[in-house]
Length: 229
Image 1: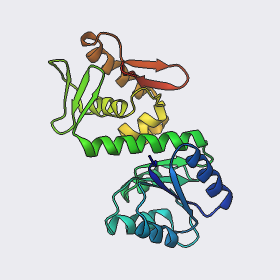
Image 2: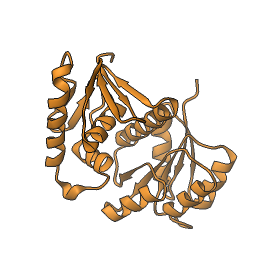
Image 3: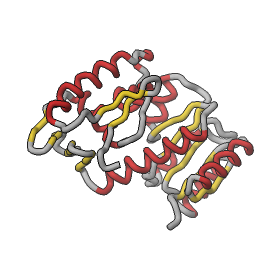
Image 4: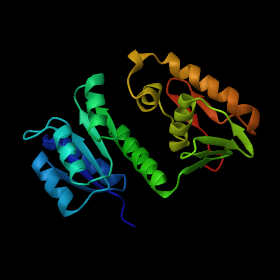
């Protein structure tokens, strides 16, 4: 079965070629273009499942391209590639309709992992409102969390943190990624807030699970373990 269709947009031929080869090796169908106008044409011709979009393009920036695509009804995820690491640029990207961003220079493994996580997350959201990982069930509509018949009372931030971990089961996510996706900004790089909330979650979940599900991977981040893996 053919993999998801990815459109790569970057004006640097070496980056386009590198991404195209890596993503094809990872099992994706890939098409690559070098500017904003070609991006819009490519989406109209053959709507991709996800776009990897460079912010700095020769004819229009990636934010403008995203606005036009969203305005035309394109709803699939967009992953920005940006040379800028400022909070302002990240917020702009999310505001215009982006789903995630990777800062240049990037690792190819990170790009593949981000794409898979985004596609998994969006497919799960489309299929059903209930997430389930191991013994934990989450109703995204009612914001209720259950372990068996036990209702787990969580604060809004604890809920968002658990949801992000459940959308990435058996995958190590860094403190920086958690800050970006749960708090949606850098929080001045204060990773201590992540440690605190992971601790709060563990105190609420661990008494009701057969084994601790949130694992610490020292030097890397955290992972929600699914016994089914």
